[in-house]
Image: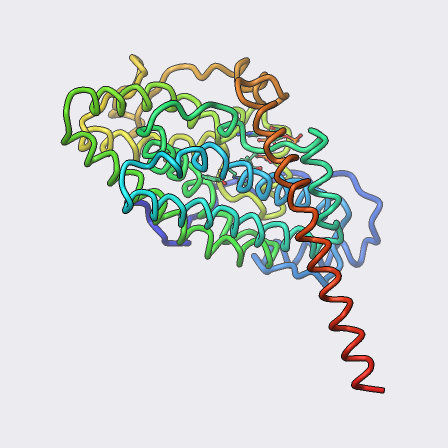
Length: 337
Ligand code: BYC
């Protein structure tokens, strides 16, 4: 359904934008730029400009936060899944998202920022995470729609990240994308089953699609013209495809899937443009998007409070793990003496 191929071509001209002004040592900078231009990978032990490091910490940590906050809307439905099969699938999916958070926090830590610092930024409301997780999951079809559309949008955005210039991030993304692909398929399959059910079940699916469609389109970030980080991210080979181009790819891939499923997409302006060979679409409500990103979406406060509580409730586990590690170290030192 979604390609797992990594040979996404760079868009013409995207790599020719100016770099940020910097005061880095020119020789090291030239070596770094040459490696980026040759599509090489930067590893943790390599020299890198501070702005590149900062951009990566920002993006990778936001991504990690999105994974662990993303566990919450679906986690709410584990106790109410309609069958043992659906419950087992949902538990596995939510666990996978926790795993993705761990790979990504580890990748961010290789850049010299500790996990405690990253989590503090999330818990104090300073750090961003994906806007999509600030909406409620009102019925069981929402779980299917999150799989189909939210994970579908996430894969579209993440496949190009498998070729990101920072080695640890790109390697983490390979595994994440494989798992997201399963997540997308299970969601679509759950919806196919509901669409073969009674009218109430079909209505639930359509209602969930209506509520989630526009929010999923906004997941790709602001339009290219209003995206302050895109040009530099492209220059550094962190981003490979622009926000608008990824959004278009997602729409083009999803419209035929909606037809097979038997649902409509809530956009009267959605139609095939023969000349462009793409679907045209209506206006996204960017005001609503920014309100949500800035902490004023329907579920922001609840999501953050749940995360903070989970972290505080888990303090004894972290303390026990540290005490165990200290004991082991003492034992090893004794044996070595
Ligand atoms: N939500 O200059 P721009 C998942 C922020 S799903 C919140 O275009 P950039 C999952 C952006 O951070 C999703 N904030 O930025 C699925 C920036 O703010 P700062 C997680 C957003 O970085 C199912 C500002 O707007 N995926 O994992 O070039 C279950 C200007 O934007 C959003 C990732 O994080 C948004 N939707 O591009 C569980 C993928 N969009 O930092 C989990 C990795 C934009 O300047 N990230 N902003 O204050 C990326 O690819 C890029 O960071 C983005 C944004 C495309 C998201």
